[in-house]
Image (cartoon, rainbow, N blue to C red; front, side, top):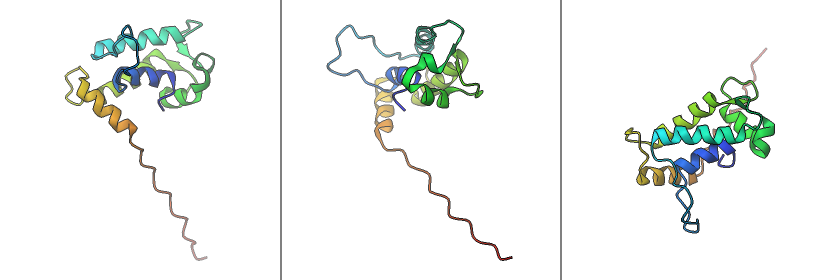
Length: 133
C-alpha cells in the first residue's frame, strides 16, 4: 500500500512523520488541503513523462498494478489527474479529523499509527449448503 507512487506521495504528505536522519533541507509534508492539491499536481506532472494527462503502467513502474488498482476509478487502465486528486484529497480529508483543512502533527501521528496496525481481513465465506434434490 505504501509503495505505490501516488499513495507514497500522499502518505509522505499526510501520515509519514519526517525521519530524524533526514537532511534539514527535506521539504515539509503538505499540511493544508491547498498544499496537498499542489503537491499532487506537481508529483503527477513529474511522473507523466509523455505529458498526455494520464499515468500509465510504464510511467508508474513496478508499483503500477497497485496504483492503478487503487486509483483508476473509471477502470480504463490509466490514472488521470482528477482520479489521483480525488483519491489523495479524500485521504487528506480522512486524516484531517477535525475538518479544518489542516493536518496537524497530532492528526498525522494518529494516521501513521493507524496505518501501522494490521488491517482486519474479511472472514471467509462459509461453503454453500447442499440443497436436496
